[in-house]
Image 1 (tube, rainbow, N blue to C red):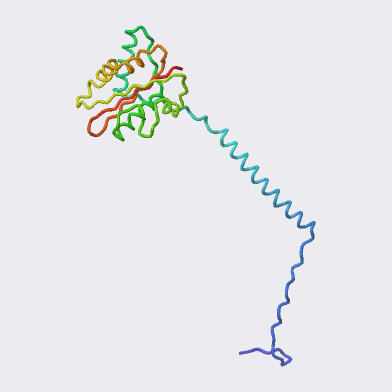
Image 2: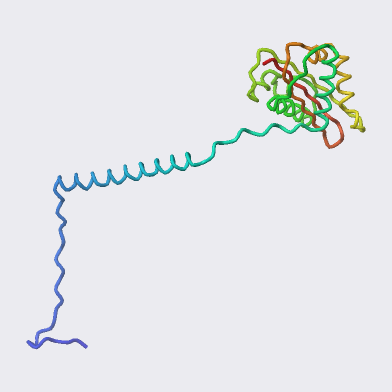
Length: 201
């Protein structure tokens, strides 16, 4: 039911007036823009300071741990150094990076089923060694494939085979090489692939 005022006239709600926004003066707009820019710059500066404080407070990254030498790899290295000792040569030092390179090639041969110094992708020893971060004026590589079920004599068979191969024997007994890495990988069917890389540092 409608209500009427005391005058007896029907009540009509007033229409709202149309609000027309007036543009802010240029000076006001400039101040607003300046404040927004300053706030943005402040946020960026605070973020940079916070990131720097965080980085400074963190301990320095530790160097990667040496590659663990597996028992078969250690036996091969010991026998190679024994042959060098017989020849009056200094023992080869084990290199973490060379171990990584040697294992990588042995793994690749085992995975793809080939036996060669040149990988299936056409990559040779020098490039593989460089890819592991080793720069050397001279490099060498020995490889061996073994399918005997008795793995206890793997190291002996490996070094004997290398001693009977002129190129591999030369690598083992070269007075120019001083660092090495050995990688042995065994497949599911029992075959073993061995790689030894040599460098002069």
